[in-house]
Amino acid sequence: MAQEKNFAWLDDAVFYEIYPQSFYDTNADGIGDFQGIIEKLDYIRSLGCNALWLNPCFASPFGDAGYDVSDYYTAAPRYGTNADLKRLFEAVHEKGMHILLDLVPGHTSWEHPWFKASMRAEKNEYTDRYIWTSSAWEAPEGMECLRGISERDGACALNFFAHQPALNYGFYKPDKPWQQAMDDPGPKATREEIKNIMRFWLGMGCDGFRVDMAGSLVKNDPEQKGTIALWQDMRAFLDREFPSAVLVSEWGQPDRSIAGGFHMDFLLHFGPSRYTDLFRSETPYFAGNGDISAFIEKYLESAARAGGKGLICIPSGNHDMPRLAHFIHGGKQKIAFAFLLSMPGAPFIYYGDEIGMRFVEGLASVEGGYRRTGARSPMQWDSTTNAGFSAAPTDKLYISLDPKPDRPTVQAQLADPDSLFHEVQKLIAIRKENPALGNRGQIEFVYAEKSAYPLAYLRTAQGQKVLVVLNPSEKAVSFPCAYTPKKTIYAFGGEAKAENGTLEVPPETAFFFEV
Ligand code: NOJ
Ligand code: CA
Figure 1 (tube, rainbow, N blue to C red):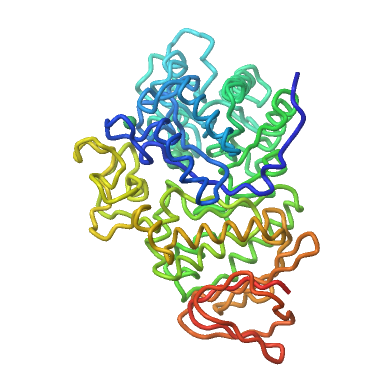
Figure 2 (cartoon, helix red, strand yellow):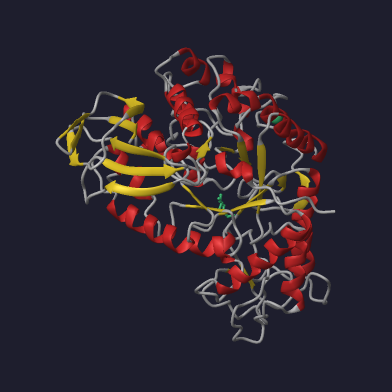
């Protein structure tokens, strides 16, 4: 008997992304584990986060850090067993938190038994699980492919790295004999198997999934109509069997993903959102000399198209991009978090960003990370050996630690009332206390001029109005403001002056005013 739908927890969810390899190692093998996450839940809770997203933690040869799954139904032994993962779900729920796993439906590892069967010349259950052309001499147009490695005569389409063959969900408009339609038996079987995988983990107690490359499942689908329809079918299955299951997409186009039944979508370092203008361009806005106007234009466009349904989520970072602290320094990091934690949508904090962990330059690539490896270094807990991440010999750590002697640690930041940790903690608490700042409150940009500072916007919900004014620049700035601050809910870096319809704010400051 299916439960009632209940997504109320999303209204005040603040997520924490955990890259499990690098979070906390409890058995001294140099790599993080499920037990490590269980032991650090109180830390995450103390920051104010009440939900987790865990990067893939399934059996894998780890050619792409686990985004190359070889068995969707088994936890990777290096993190623990399925029973340990279930214990993590239970521990999360006991603390009133929620947890999303990472679902990778677009491709498997080439070591997956399905792929091995699919490479065989004789027809079998997995012949159509992947996208194969009808001859090894014919490459699939517009896609990279694998050929010359199978007994089967064909080229197999790839989704990402060479070891990640694309699963077959069909083509929106097939125009070659080997291209199957979305409702052909092969693509339908793939889809049903993904439902089984969701059934398995939801049945064990996870609350939903972050879905990898969610927008690219159906091929030859330029407007993603086929992929949207596919996700609507997945959602209908969830509504029948796990109505409270939550889905967040790596898609980057909320108008499309939300139409597909996702509750949330990310703005990302790729796609049309101009997310990189905030923290990661040549001149990021929050570094104090940038331009936020294109971001806002795109943001308003997606918000309007998403029609108030679903949450548009702006992450502090993730395991695929250089860390926020690589570009944004000092007090400006606090202003960046004042932005992240006062925008609508569910905030996502990438582990370690709350203490300003740095992007580690010059690391050798680990597990297909390449440059991304620098954003995946072990969490810095304290000043003991290996920053308290692991009791393994230092040369056995999964990725090397930030070698700088002044690397930030949780321990040092907890002891410092002015630390970034405490600012983030305070901002989350303020977000939770003020309905206007919540995940579903309205937003209206009051001042977001081209290449200008400050950025000002009004958040509204339940009769409360909060004016947010952010000035990451190094100059005092003012803007015409029709709202009169009645009460200061949050101030960082100085005092604002309101006079004759103008609001003036000092350099490197952030304010939330009730108006
Ligand atoms: C996006 C994931 O975030 C990234 O880490 C991965 O390499 C690709 N998708 C391929 O799965
Ligand atoms: Ca371990």
